[in-house]
Image (cartoon, rainbow, N blue to C red; front, side, top):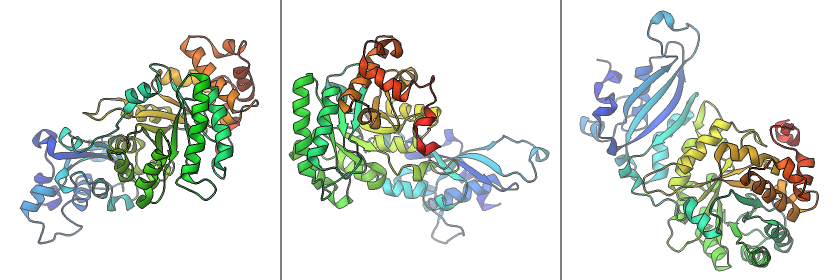
Length: 442
């Protein structure tokens, strides 16, 4: 018998104890004459107990305990006859492999090394999904606050939450940033964050100085608008400095934290979220994530990334807005939102933070897609307003108010100058050509 056809490597799903396995789903392609069964077995063995050639130490006992099992191979299209297979076209198939999580327990770096390790160097292989049994999920704490906790903290039970990131992105000193912070906050921004490009404690903006200046601005704005403002201080840094940064930011008054999750790794996020001394919400920025996710036939999907971000404890996570600056597919945007929102055992929900070229004219479209359960992430759409960031934040809130009241935003703008100015500059999504706004897609 061909060893790569060994039935022990190919149980049906119903024939394994699902509590013992993490299921990985892949999109794979090969040559026109690929043996999909043998190729699947080779991939599973490579990422678990064996190698490209049989080795004496891979005993039946070792294989039974640690070899990945193939529980699904689905050719796309699903050919049945030799005559149906094009002679020159590449074969594409979906592969489902069950990895015994005893191999990696709660060790996420080791899990990723297992499910998308060496095989990530192969052409045309993308990890589409990971499915975790309750026994695996129990090892993780997830977000401390989640959607409900963040809403309770802000006192916002229903409407979409308005986030703003300080612009310019970096190079700005605390005193100047605090002025912009105050204007955006008093105009109605609920959550203001450091940009992803300013993190840790750069010489021009020491961490404690930045936090103190921004939180003072938050207190002044809150007293005027009678609402609460969160500030996520970006503590992104060398992993060895992450926890110290978080402690220093909180001691200086920060009421939330931000981390560039792909840059520091999922385990860096988890370290902060599971620390009992860190009792503020944590936002995850997904910059650099495209290097791992954006290739259609390589890397890992944004759905996998979001599941890991939620598992590792982000209360809020950036999800690139559809048809805005980076032109994300609506289907991907919605699926990532589903993964943050849907039940996941005891793991709390992660708030989707829709960002990347959002303006007041996009609010009706985004609410139409997701309802109210998301965060509007707005940078230049606030700071670039012709009348300044206070007016920019007011325009965003006016757009949200109009949508929540079921009023067309162009009608609402007739009595709200800030919204009218914003619509004049950027337009209404679905009516005006938004592609003209962004140089990145031109």
